[in-house]
Length: 170
Image (spheres, one colour):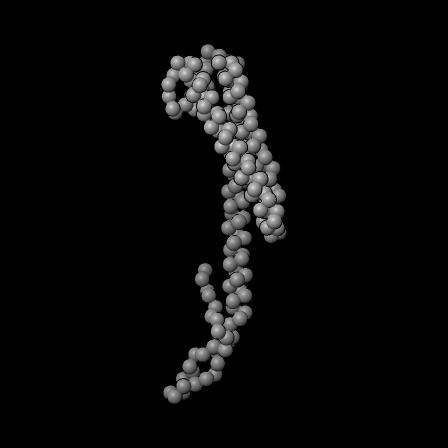
């Protein structure tokens, strides 16, 4: 069981490292969004996808290791969590403390990555709004004023000099 526990701790440390890689990419990602460097943003997205794939593999490995440890301890349960492992390692304080430390680091890294993702999502939303504003502005520049054409009843016909109207969608 000691080797399973060590492998579990290494897997959790690997997950933490992957989340820290995501966090380190965030400043570069924000700059690429702000300064409209789409080629840099595309490269960062490829890197993030590779990290996400690695995280998925590590998570699967962690789940398998936890189930193996539970089986060694005499439990058969598909809903085994790290917190459950900590609670059931009361008789082994050294392993329990290592697991608590690894879980804390992993949670902190995952929480930080989630916060930064939320901030980046808001930044992207604002960037899209700016693009939509620019498009609306460009469309309005092409709109010409109404003509002074009058019909039979001496009322304006409402014809425009340009062929496009202003889209005031807000």
